[in-house]
Length: 514
Length: 105
Image 1 (cartoon, rainbow over the protein chains, first blue to last red):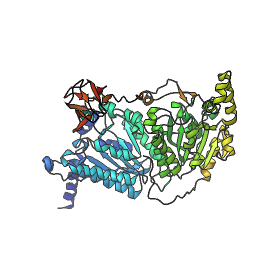
Image 2 (image 1 turned 135 degrees about the vertical axis):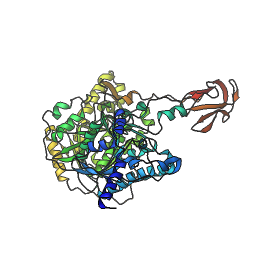
Image 3 (image 1 turned 45 degrees about the vertical axis):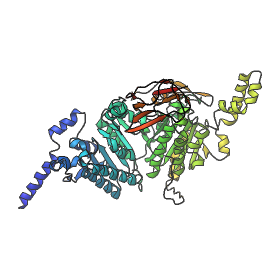
Image 4 (image 1 turned 90 degrees about the vertical axis):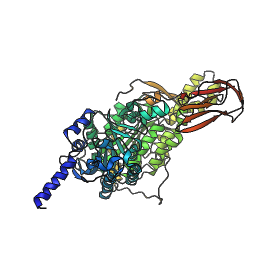
């Protein structure tokens, strides 16, 4: 064969595979409101940065007529590229090839790019759009899933792993995203469930639509499986770009440093926090009053909104923020909020992102449903995560810090490096009303006017305990500072703690309460 | 996503906090104490066989019916000695989770 004919041969082989992206397949996806795998990669990655591998991989299945079936790329595109200048490994399942079904070759392409990402120490992004296991390949397809889960687990805490659900993701397929750090979903496109509506109907007789069972909104608001919700694929890709700019490439690196910018002037802590501790406010406004350019990337915005988590920058350096949200459920800790914050804290600790905790909560949520849902076990997650974290930990008590909530929200006792409190902070075992009713039960019940006596005793308790000075006198607060001083104190703390190292006794791994 | 804007009062340790609440909290199930006279389906499925009749005396541990679910035939037994007051299901009937199957007295 001459050189020319060999090159012609190469182009002809390549076009046989590329044929998957015909106008017809683009139309097929567009009819479902979706982009094709290739379009997605191009929209997400920096211009012309994508390099594809394993174009010629083919499946080896023989049963059920599979030996006669040619599946271009075996239904998945894999490669490397850049997102806002950061190198990443990526795979995107192609729904137009056998429904994006996962066979062994398809899975091995994915595990190969996963191994690549770990070795190179760069983030992995998986775009899921697949009908599930390729039934014709039987147990080999299950093997494929298992090999992916195994690698997701080994890569956890080593490189950031991002899952993007842009189509169905059902059965075993859901467990790869579940094992990764961030799951992105798009309204009306993403569908995730273990067993679909059809099976549920035939086996159990319960009827539900796909959207109500496992649509993007359900996973963003109810289950907490998704971390970012978007109205469109393009909005989703913008969210991913933003996230990638906030996180480091791997666990040995720090996130990219940006030029420092002051917060926007319209956010003023004193104007945001109401004096009465029973009045709500939006803690996100406090975050915006502290961070560079008031730029805050919220994670799991719609799930367990009584706690707010997300990324921001201080002096150009990425920090992870955890804040009680008095606007929702008075900012209590409960099963969902503990689970949400606990996982986020562990992500930040794994990837050298300092933690800023903003405290204003009345405690854990009382209720039979909470107790029976295991608030003891789930609530312990936040204690475990904070205690385990060795990144710089900075806590600011904005207003209430009562009872178990005070301890849990990165108190000095859980290893906070810096604990600051505003002069209006109330650090106590519980709110004045509840405390007075218990401590002065006898005086109140025996008084000629119990209500008047209760008021006197509540005022007495408030005077004595609803302030930061009892805790400060014990050394549990490092400094009481004014609202105007908070940002400067945090910046200083971050600067001082820049090279923090904290060593723990050797262990194979801890046993968190999950 | 639409937010729930309404402000509620949430009581924690005798203090009323003004706050919004989320959909999940709104939809939470109220606790009902367990009534040992009422036997409900612990899993959704299909009733395959009923061994007893209304008014029949039964003893604790006696087989009452078969509830088939997830390809398993579950023998439901009487939790205590008593009389079958009512049977709320028929053979081959599909039942939802927590649906009342039979009552004792």
